[in-house]
Image 1 (tube, protein in one colour):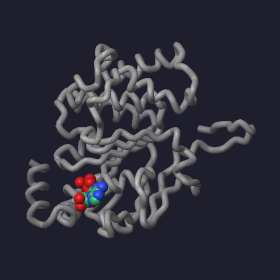
Image 2 (cartoon, rainbow, N blue to C red; image 1 turned 45 degrees about the vertical axis):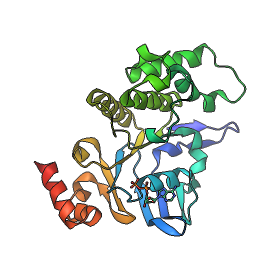
Image 3 (spheres, protein in one colour; image 1 turned 180 degrees about the vertical axis):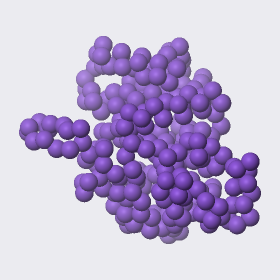
Length: 261
Ligand code: ADP
């Protein structure tokens, strides 16, 4: 797909290019949490970042998006810094990181997603309000539009945050542990929707620690344990050897057996 800039110059749609992550290292108080990780994130696929607790998955995700300081590394799309497509990137953070006492309604959260397009200081018009309803319908949360977010279940809240990403018309969506502590209905709604978005060409990157649905949910994997264990298609990377490298020999065996059962 091509897009025209204001100056009339035609340039390629960068969101259809791989995201090249090179030599990312992040340290907290001089202790490395992620060390020298390089991967290429394929566009139009669902990529899972997996690894045991404390492996640096969240840290790596935040480093890619530029939410935390890195010791080294860069992230590019077709040779351009990721910032070039900033407005096209959505980030759905872990629910545990969100202040649920903040008084805001479901539809207001989703409306926030339209702000990058709307621009600051411009009031939302009919189009934006319609967009909010449409996005809430996509996550099957339209009946909850006027609820305070503090009154939602974990799964409902996750769906609202995904609706916000949809309202942003993001082409690349990063999600940090979206399935932790949510009900089965929400998990299915979210997975089906993410697959639909992937089929429309969007790039989805999900931090995930539970291996049971790995084959079902992801096209590609980035397997981490501080350093990179493997990346590539699920078929190539989801092997006993790689899982043992990431999770430890005994754990790896138990997990793989459990997954294959
Ligand atoms: P994961 O998402 O795989 O569970 P994290 O990226 O959350 O791993 O954490 C990786 C390591 O960095 C862990 O040892 C964790 O304790 C540490 N860590 C994470 N965030 C911070 C922080 N803000 N300050 C200090 N250490 C941190």
